[in-house]
Length: 277
Image 1 (cartoon, rainbow, N blue to C red):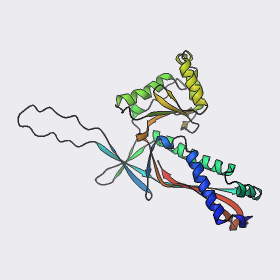
Image 2: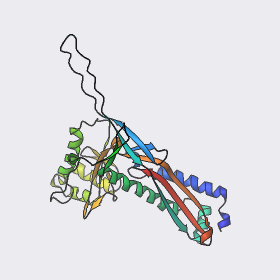
Image 3: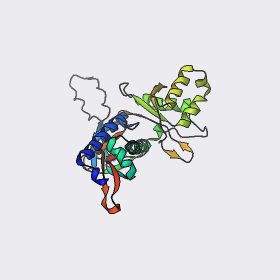
């Protein structure tokens, strides 16, 4: 059977995998900033807020000269790989149709890895880089951007409103779409809120989100995910804008199939990625 894995079949398998990857993106990949990485690290620059112009109060006055705020973050790329053995009886189905369930589950696993890392990065430290000496500093998420659990277990409308308030207090441009990820239990919590129970529109939106649709809720585009960070029995909901999270790609989805000579010609699928967040 190993002899049937021809060069043409291997290429068809790779091409089909990449085509499926375009159709089965992770839940969060297209909702964050994606940057190419050449090598193991990349430096992501961003521009902050410029100072307002000053009034000229005298006839001769020095020109106001202030540097625009800017920053730099480091993204480290880490190789990820997964090898899966394929039963020999299944190889005949591979030859006939490369779009098998094996390919789908491997791709889904890669997407879960991306989603988990992005959400952990959203609530974790970022690595700031001094532009002069290229020294790095861990920068924790500011306390003002965290709504901690204080005895009111579960997601509430107030907590969601607090997240939107933080965006508004920082004058986030309306052109940037605001996203929030809820766990299934968080959505159930919201459905039990008295205010929600009085609103048919909110109830319908939450029910649609439970089915995997993306709906607007409280000013956010909303996604349901089971891969949000969890501490003890509390799972974190994450709110962000596209420019606030970065996925750095050194090597995108790749896959290969072939025999393992060291394992009695066992057929193996090898999927790889090289990325950082």
